Amino acid sequence: MSTVKTFRLLLLALVILAIPAASHAQIAVGISVHIGPPALPVYVQPVCPAPGYIWTPGYWGYGDDGYYWVPGTWVIAPVGMLWTPGYWGWGGGVYMWHGGYWGPHVGFYGGINYGFGYGGVGFVGGEWRGGVFNYNRSVTNVNVTVIRNTYNQTVINNNTTINRTSFNGGTGGVTAQPTVAEQAAAKEQHVQPTAEQTQHQHAASTNRAQLASVNHGQPTVAASAKPGVFSGKGVVAARAAANSNRPATANASSANRATANNAASANNSRNDRPPSAMTKSATNSKTNTTTSTNAKMTQNSPNANPSNATRPHANRPPAPQHQSAPHPNKPEHNKP
Image 1 (cartoon, rainbow, N blue to C red):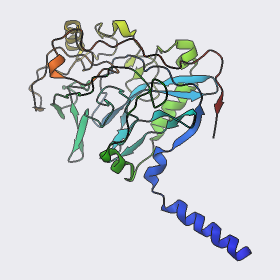
Image 2: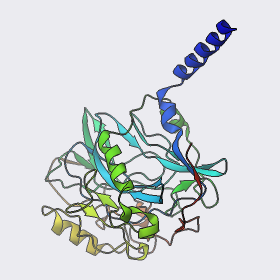
Image 3: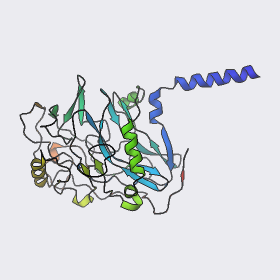
Image 4: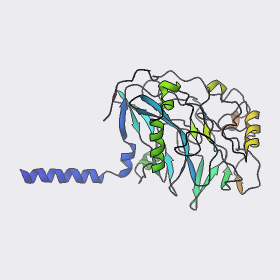
C-alpha cells in the first residue's frame, strides 16, 4: 500500500510540474467576491518619468474593508517584456481576480478597456525595438525632450461600445473571450509582477483614502508617475466622468506644461490621447500616420478613431453602467 501511495504522490507532482508557469498567471489568485467591482475611474495619465518605463493601468483590488483602488503607474519593465493587466472575472457565482503578468506578448485581460493603449485587446502604447522600448505618442503621455524613442501611430478602435466596466462576465460585465493570439500568449513563459508593483499594491491596500467605500469610486490618487508614490508631483486624482475633458495641468512637467495645457484646452471632443500626442517636434520621432491635433489622454475611452476626431459628442465618457457597486457594509467574500 505504501508503494502505491508513493507512486500516486510522484504522479501528482509530475502533473503539477508539467503545467506551464504561464497558466498559473491566468488563474484567479487569492480572492473571490460576491459583489462586482465599481466602474473604472476617469483620470489623466501622468507623463512618463524616463525611458524604459511601461504603463500599468490602475485596477480595483480587494481587502478586508472591501474594494480599494490601486493607482495606474509607470513601471520599469523587464527588457523585452510587455504587461498583461489583471482583471476581475465572473464565474461559479463569484467575481474572481486574475493576476497580471509580464510576457513577450500581451495575453487576455478580460476585454476591459483600461485606456492608454490597453483598449481591451492587446497593447498599442509602444513596442520593443532592439532592446529599447519605443512609445506611441498617440496614446501615451511622453515628453519628447526627455524620451527620444517615440513614434506616432493612429490607433483605430472598432469597438463601438463605450463604457467603464471593470469586470468580465456576469450581469453588466464585458462579454469578451480570449482570441487565438491571446490563448497562445497564455502558454508562453511569464514573469510575475516586480517587487515595485507588489509594494505599490500593498501601499494602496493600506491607504483608507483608496477604499471605494470612502472615495465612492473617485480616488484622490487615481494614478502616479512612479510606483508607491501617493503624493506630490506626478500624482493624479480621478475626475467626474461628465468633466473628463477639462484641461489637465496637475501632472504636466515643467518642460511640457504649456504644450499639455494648450492641447487639453483645445480638446472638447477627444479624451483618449495624451497632451503630447500631437506636439510637433524634430526630436528623433517616427511619424507613421497623421493624427488629429486635438489630443488629451484620459482613462477608459476607446482608442483613437480618425472618423470620430471631429465629432465632439462621439468620445465623451458615458455615465457608469449599472452594476453591483461596493456597499458600505463589507460584502460577503471568500478567500480561497
